[in-house]
Image (cartoon, rainbow, N blue to C red; front, side, top):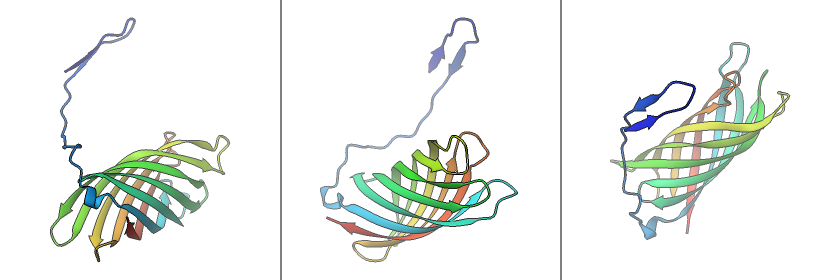
Length: 169
């Protein structure tokens, strides 16, 4: 339960409900660094734009059995509104599925430089969903759906990407 009382304005009451995971469970044998490269198709959510092709390079570190932290460089390509590139940091929650599949969701900030807007540097939010297939002990292929929100609502982008990753000790 959360109660907020602010002088001179309205009060709020809310009930918070969540889902948790044991973040203390570590699997040292799986604490490998993963390097991934993706080819992406970026679409700005505006009727005057065409899709742009870009790429991502990512380093991901497993933190627990079901969570990872990643740092990515994204080059989004150019359309009529967006010519953006930057660095994203995401927290990932992953769930193993049968037959060497994994589904993951990630969220985090994306600091980017959009050369086509006056105040082109700034924070964005990044939400990701990934479906990954282990092809060998240390190699995976995956598809990823991302959503970039720039907080102005005019340069949000949806991304569809495919990639390959390699795990290293």
